[in-house]
Image (cartoon, rainbow, N blue to C red; front, side):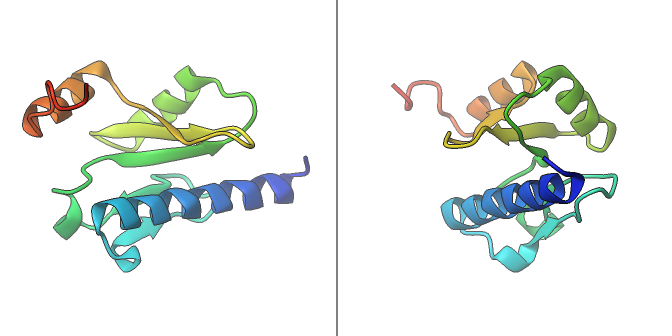
Length: 116
C-alpha cells in the first residue's frame, strides 16, 4: 500500500473511532479532536470538558500487522493516560491499555460484577 493510501486508511480509522466514542458516550463530534495523519501527537482526544466521560488519549492503528509494544510506547510518549485503538480489515475495533488503568476504570465505574 502506498504512503497516501496508508494515511487515508489511518484517517478513516481515526474518524471511525471518534464517531464510536461520540455515539456511545454521547460526546459531540465537535468535542473530539482528530490529529492529521503524519503529525506527531495524540490521534484522537476529547476536550477537557468531556474527559470525565472518556479520559484516554488514543493512538489509532488500522493495520493488518501491528507491533502492539511499539504502538503503546508511541501512545505513552504523548499522554499520561494512553491507549491504543486498533483493528484489521473486516474485524472489530480493539483497545489496549495498561492493566493498572483498566482496573482503575473498572473500580471507578463499579463494574466488578456487572460485565458477567
